[in-house]
View: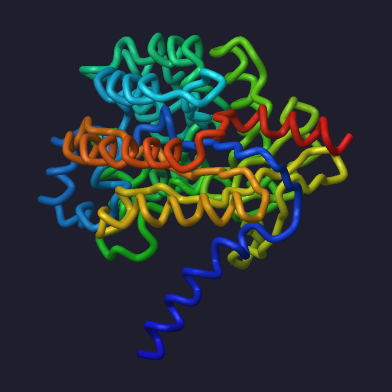
Length: 380
């Protein structure tokens, strides 16, 4: 009974703690920040089944079970839902879609004998998948409709040095994933999950420098693909060294999306935490946008509770005079591997949007970059 009461107290207090301090507003601003668009993760249902047959318990991890490249159908279903709602100013809900611009070029890596890493642009990856050839065009149409606003999440969702070192040394799990065109693989032991997706974990100062070079290359590649610089950046897995702030600022990034607590990798150890407040500014005049609401139905067992919980967190944000910055990853909207995953979650998203607008008709839908610009305008 004590544990149950304690748990309920934490659930009640946590939304308010996330909103402590920082920038405030009397407006009811709502943002959807959605990570991982463009990353391969699980390539197909066929590969998923091969993983299970080989002893990889991918059915126990939602990212391995559901997450994949969003297909044309996935995008169309999501777009149609977003276009069916609008705020009092006529703006639709808009996903700030944090994208990866590249994936491993498995053929070139193999041809090099695992001696050199190569990547391919997301446009090339899309061409290789059965229901994805028009996906980049759909991304662009989403921009035009103001419902899909790409920002940078990195070059690829992969720890390049860790991946290549594992391949060179014949790691059986990494090689299994590579043969099936997966960026890494869960270990059969299930210890730690797919560690290769931790893009910015580094093992030495030289590795740390290489990670920065990849980040800067990714930001340039983003501009080549979309025709504009990314104003925000979302560190993959919320791993981030403040030592990167200066070079990233020079590359055009003004705002960081992420959690209140960000993890700073430490060579020879795990990491240390840095805590941020909404609108907090670092010495390079970059600001932090702190996520304070969660809508991740694919990650929870009892989906029937997700809308109520999300509404509670939005209400807490508004009571604290904060925007509702909703974290909702791509895996919630992908049906390429399991259509039921997408279909069930879109129903829940529809319920959430309807309840939000019914309760707070003055809601304004904006992007993460627009929020950052508003804070700059008010704070000077």
